[in-house]
Image (cartoon, rainbow, N blue to C red; front, side, top):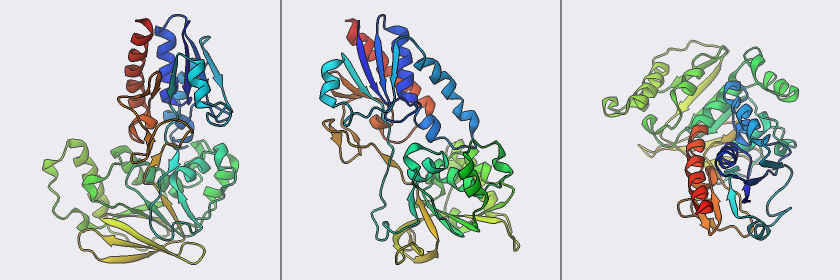
Length: 363
């Protein structure tokens, strides 16, 4: 019988466990999870107003229900069990812990109150166990740094009305907080231009259909862009952004969601809490100060250190060669490739690693 430990019960870990349970006769898989519940970012990383995406947990549940799989929640490697013990106890050890820590901006003022990382903030509205002590104060003017889907998810969650959130998977205290905020402006800052934005068309389009929000983009953001040289998917994103830029706005009580491209954060101002953000235009070098009451940084994540596990401090993930950390020890998912790719990406990567492990153990 082969014994395997998988550390992390998110999509990557569960997909890997499923394939190994199906294809490796006599295997015994221990699935370690530090939280009280399984499934990782399939729950805590998916926006609560996208319940269809969370349906993947139904498939993952079938995996943890398998006889070959033993799920152990509330068990943290490095705290409750050491890396050395894992290597001695199992034939193979695979880390699938993701990348949950917020990266830092590295600018002055980042330590002020009302400055939040997107990981911490999304854990709050997903009622993650790690966010029980977080009670965000947003004010009227909210800034979001980042041009990915996480930034758009946060903007959308903040701008939706209570009625629009009726179908969102929210706990009562989060629902109440979102319904009673006083937000008037949401500013989304990206260091580069529209062609470098990493958000996808569906998420961008959703912003244009919100009942109580207006999206604004400055027309000069598109100067010099030749869309004919871009892939079709990017062309459609640019077209959607241009449609926002073409809109004219009368005075309105709707929330204004404004995109700022070519805007590099220089410093955060304030005494104890944030009062403003200084940004530099990467094209002209001109600086501007935007008044803000809160700021959420959505600039990516890093894998947390685990004592004894080789770590790449430059890439902020485990050190490995083609998923191999050291003999008998592998990594998969975001702790292997960094915080990029969606759930289907994790599935295909898990399949590739499973084939490699099966070939080793059966040889």
